Every structure is written in C-alpha cells, then in structure tokens.
Image (tube, rainbow, N blue to C red):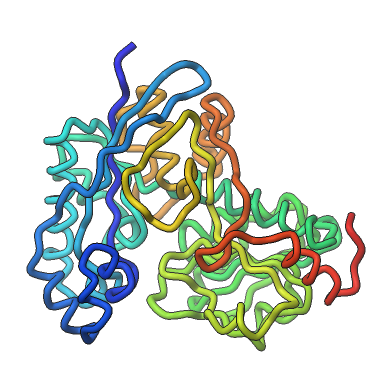
Length: 360
C-alpha cells in the first residue's frame, strides 16, 4: 500500500512568541520589527511528519510548511502579496511530494478561503474547517456535561455566526439545545443564518453585540476572524463553557486570570492514530493535533486528493463526512486544553463547585 502524502501550512500567530521559538532574539524586538523581517522571508519546510497510521493499516507522511506572516500582516498587506506567499508555501509542499495541502489558522480564511490558492497549485487543498466544526460542537457538549450542565436544558451561543464556520456550528449545535443565540456584527447575515435553521430543535435568536449575546449563555462556541480578543471576563455567565475555535483566540487571556468559575477550552484538539512524530513543537501534547490538521491527514489516508473544504461555506454534509472518516481511521477528540495548558480535573471541579452543581 502506497504511503499517503500531505502537507500543512502553519504560520506565527504572535509575532514575538511564535517567532522566538526559532529565533530567540525576536522576543526582545518590537512587534513591527519582527513583522518587517517576516515580510522579507520566504516560506520554508519546517519538519517532516512521520508515524501517522490509520486503524485500517493505511500510513501517511507529511510536512509542516511555514508561511512567515502573522494574522495582522495577512489583513494589512495587499491580498495579492499574501496569496503569493501562501502559494509559495504550497509549491514547496508539492515539490516535497505532498498530494493534498491543509491551510492552517489565518491562511484558511484570508481572501476567499483557499479558492484562489487551490487554483494556483498542482495539488488538492482543504481548510480543515469541516472537522473543526465537528470537534468544536462535540467538545463543547462534552465539556458542558463535565461541569454539570445538562445540554437539553442549556442556552447556547455562537459568536461569529454570520461566518461560514459559525453558521454551520450553529446548525449542528441547534440539534442538541433548546435555545441558541447567533452572535455577530452583521445582523442581516445573522437573520439569514437563522432562516436556515427554521425547524431546528432550538429556539433561535440573534444578537449583534457580544456582551448581549453571552448574557444567558451556558455553552458558547466562538469562531470569529478577529485579530484581537472579542470576549471579555465580565460578559460570561458563572459556570459556562466556552469553546474557542478561533486562531488567534477570541477569548481574552484575562478570562483565565479573573474567572475561575468558567471553563474555556480550545476547539479541535484531536488524537492522531499511530505514533505520529510531527518534528515540530506547536504546543500540543504528543500524538495530538488541531482538527484542521487532522482533516488533511484523514483525506490523505482515504486517498481523497481533492479540494474538500474551500471557500466561505461549510456544509453539514461535509461535517458529517469528516466524522465518518475520523471514526474509520481512528481520529478522536483528545483531552481539553486551555491557553496552551491541559485542562485539569481540579479546574473542572472548581467551575462546577462555583456554579453550585453536582456531577451529572
């Protein structure tokens, strides 16, 4: 059986912290100085990924390719320049032997969500957003039960619901909750999203302000494309669970410092089958990766070298398809993480106690 081959683009989310992992001097320089240097660097192969093995016996190898631009640069620089950098990274992946390319973090949302990049490359492209949605909803509901919440009695909120990932998160989450608030800045698009959910189990409402939308929310999924934090400590309900899918994060770091009565988890932390060696430290425990990375790997293991999740739309069918592939190959939701650290039983117990709940 031929080894499947994939690649995944990663890039610095924080100009100082992430660049300093390779160039320690970066932590002492002004952010603008680091970004000035990044703009002049070319993409490069960061590591060779080995040991990915499906429960079917199929094996895969891959490469992390670094695109040296931060989210702020991707928003501020001319779009054509950004596309060119991402395309250069994809070309390196193709030259290494990859047959499908995953777009990580902001490379998956900048411009038209990978469509232009896919047209310029000789290999297939996916953003990984379908499996990201699947694991975000699964993780949020599981974490809610762990802090003593009964989803069948909860109010949910999706921040960024006017966007493609947020809208689909809302559609899937609405199957499990009695009430759901769609939160975003564009009320017209929120109303359009609500129309798509007619007939859902949940009672759907919309809110154009984040503080307003979170006021009564027990379970929150947040997935905006904002560069800066959009969720502040005072806006969260005691005992709630927040699944932050966005990169950069939507939840302010102040939340973890000031609110020990809420649980913030990162969306899409997945255990990868086999004995994967990523050859690069992106802050996760061994054998785990983001859901978007995992979608790229499972498509390779399937031999589906095709453009899968592209553009601004993520369908429920695609979400369900990735869930099926994950079960087949042995990808599964791993333990929870929050701000680069594992979530402990003590944290979960503390949130449950502060809210006055007993374990379900």
